[in-house]
Length: 254
Image 1 (cartoon, rainbow, N blue to C red):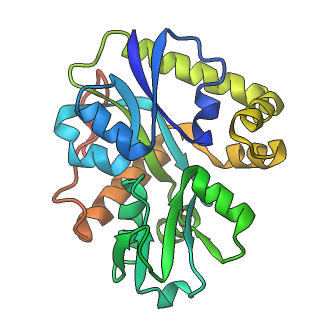
Image 2: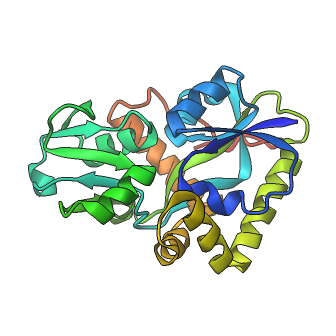
C-alpha cells in the first residue's frame, strides 16, 4: 500500500473526492510533507515546488498533476495595511516553502521574519488565509494574482513527487487521483457540500474557490514552474535551475 501524503488544507478535497485507490493517507502541512518525503516516511506526496527544485536529483515528478492557479488563488495571502511598495518586512508562515520563496521574488527588498514577530505584512497560506479573508478587514494581496501580473503565467505551488526509484503502483495512483478530480468536476455541488462539512466553510465559497484551483500539469503550468525556478535562482532561493524529471520519462530541461 502506497503511503500518500495529503496536504491538510481544503485545497486537496477535489483530488481525494471518491478516490479509488488503496493508499495510506498521511496528512500534514506542505513543509511537513516535504520533510516526510525526503525522509522516506511517505512514498508519494504533493510537496512545495521550491522543495522539488532543491532536491530534484533525488525525486521524480508525476507528470500530469500539480496544484496551481492562473491568477488569484485565495489561499495564499499577504495581509498588510501598508501599500505593497511600502512593505519593508514580512512575517512568513512556517507551513509553506513555495510561498516564502514567492514573496522573495515579488518583494525582493523586504526582510522576512517568523510569523509571530511584528512586521509590516503577514504571509498566510491554506485554511488560515481563507479564514483571514472572512474575519480580517485588513487589505489582502493575493500572491497568485501578483504572480500572474508579473509573468503572465500560472503559478505552480506544489508538485506531486516520489523518491527514485518510484514505488510500484505510482503511475496507477496518478490515474486514480486524476479520476477523482474528474468526478469532483462532474459533481461540484456534492464536492462543495462535503468539503463544507469537513472544513467548515460555506459551500458557495468553496465552490468558487475550487474553480480557481488547477490540478492538471500542462504546458503552461510547466512554463510557469520553470519561470518560478529561474526567478527563485535570481533572488538567491536556488543555486541553480533544476531539470523537470518526470516519472518514467526523459528529463525536461528547464
